[in-house]
Length: 271
Image 1 (cartoon, helix red, strand yellow):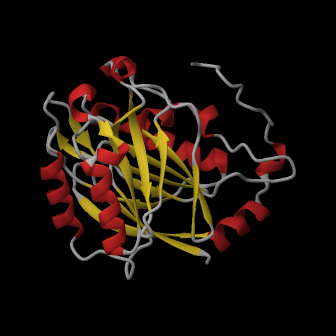
Image 2 (cartoon, one colour):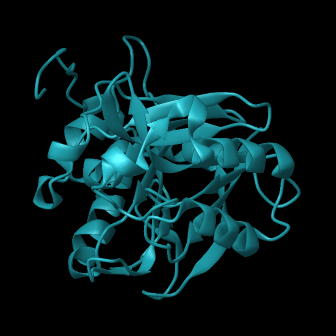
């Protein structure tokens, strides 16, 4: 396959109310399914909002109502569902991005960079590994919100003899409106420097702390040009197409990757 239909879900969230958020999202998604899309991307902490109340809101993976809901939605709709939730695992708490397939398979990525200005580093554990998943011939790197500010973590790290590690970067977020320009700028920068598609999905509305979110969810191509870019503060669901043939052609035509600096991330650094 050379195309990947990807649906961005920009919406408001109910504070610390998973059941209400599940129902709200089901209503918003309506009859969206595999006839329309291959992948549905929800915001960071789609079940609760960006809560630091990890001890009360997080559940183990096999007991999480939100993970179960995501799996059920993926199966019912026949497409992959992804977004992050608070999870308890082996005595630690994580802001965990879940990748749920229609076949019932689950992959996950634990947020690496924890937003210390909100005390996230005191309430959640730091992820230790990157996660690349595959769908319809595309390789996708998973990331969560604050990760976007740290280009080394999301930089292409191809194996020896390979040119690219992934074809699209997915970033789910609760990124407040006062910092909307860094969000927009960094999404485009990650696309340009990695010669990749970037999908950034952020929420709108206001949370229980009075923080406003502008959304600015975007699908950006490998040249940094927005393919989906709606007015701020507007809830929407829109599906865009990632085209592997066009991506490969541009990488061949503009081989900046040949001049990239090779590097490796050392185990334990930054932990």
